[in-house]
Every structure is written in structure tokens, then in C-alpha cells.
Length: 297
Image (cartoon, rainbow, N blue to C red; front, side, top):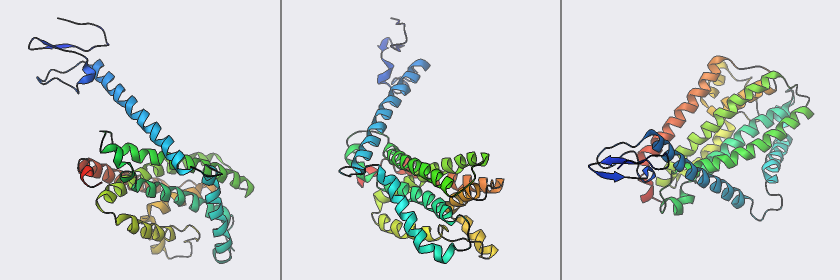
């Protein structure tokens, strides 16, 4: 018996009719493959389910973070501004006397590091905090991490708007080179996802990671030249800072915004290499330990 139409992908197998390809992965038990249209429909249905879950997770994370707060999302803007004010009051006397646009210099560093730190910290707990869901329902575990990163990205976007307004106040000249900021922003998004994959996987097996990460992130902040310049350092020490991926993002922002200079090709490639390495490591860890997460949450 033959059937037609795109709604049902049916095919014969030893005289038996297999219908509704949505119920099957790619083939029947006898290795009879379903049509390409059925595969596309299956993927579309799967995508819609994941999209709905992702949207609900993002909404839930926002409601949970700003629940019972007066300012709500206003804290996303106010918090980095207060941090910037404190850092300016403390460090201007020591490092900013001879530096032009020192407050913007601070803002660049604080903007990038705050986004990285928040994404990595929230991403680290994304699996464990959603264990009640993925232990009962078979869903891609990376969706929990991506929802956290979406939330932090929105917060970063709001702060970025304030940053550009502040640049105008600080008499920073906006040039066509500002379009190049899309490069470090895009790579930083991917880098944060990669760090989240690694940290969340490790946190499932080793709870001590949260304490080690807290210490390491503090050290990383001091090693990222947020409130001081490395120009007075030796050439060898300046090159050593390039090992720190977060410093690369901060330096790129400062080059474009303050100096109006586009970094060279080698600098772009170095950033891309760091991002690729951490992403590959994170994806490998999720792929390797995907089934084992259930036994440790």
C-alpha cells in the first residue's frame, strides 16, 4: 500500500507499513531510511521543542535573578557603574595621574571582565541547578548553559549602551573603527560559552571547583591590567600578559575606543585560537561525560 503527501512519510518494510516518520529517528529496525523531507520535519520539530525550552529557561532565570528587587534589571547597569566609581576613586591617585581618559580605560577593563566573570560563574552552576529537570526529561544539557549566557549577554548589552554614552561624556571620538568591536564581542560570547562548558562539567564531579574558581578569578582580575597600564613593564612581561585571554579582549577594546587603532592580524588570530581551544575542550567534555552527569548530580 502506498501513501502520498508530505504529512506522513511512509515506506514499505517486509510488507509492513511504517508510518509517521516523526516517531522514528532516521530509519526503521530493518535499516530502511525515511525520506529527506521527513528528516527535515523531524529536525524542525526537535528544534521547536528545544527553542521553547530555551526561551522558558531564559525567562525563568531573569525572574529568579530580579525577583523581589525594586530596581529589577536596573541593577545590571547600576552595579558596574558603582564598581567603576569605587575603582576610579581608589586607583586614580596611583595609576591614572598621567593617563588620558583613565576612567574610560577603567570602564573598558571592568566592562569586559564583569561580563566574563558573571558568565563563567553562572555557567559553572548551570547543570547542577537544573538537575531536577534533566534527570527526569531527556533534553540537551547545554541548553541550561546557553540560557545563562543569554541572560548575561543581555546584561552586558545594557551596560555597553551606558559605556558608549560615557564615552561621549569623556570626549571620546567615535570613528568607523568602532565597528571592529563586534569581533571581540562575538569571540567573548563564544569564549564564555566554552568556559561555562568546562566549569559546569567539572563542577558536577568536583564541588571544590567553585572555591578554586573564586580564587582564580580574583587572581585573573589582577592579571588583566584592569586598573593599571603595562607600558612600564619590560617587553618580556608585556608579552606574558598575552597568555591571558581576558586581557586580549580588554586590550582590543582599549585599542579601538581610546587609541582608535585596529590591532594587527596576529592579535586577531591569537584571540581566535584561544576561543577555539576552550570551545573544543568544553564540547569534548560534554560529549564524553554526557551520560555520566546523571550519576553525580
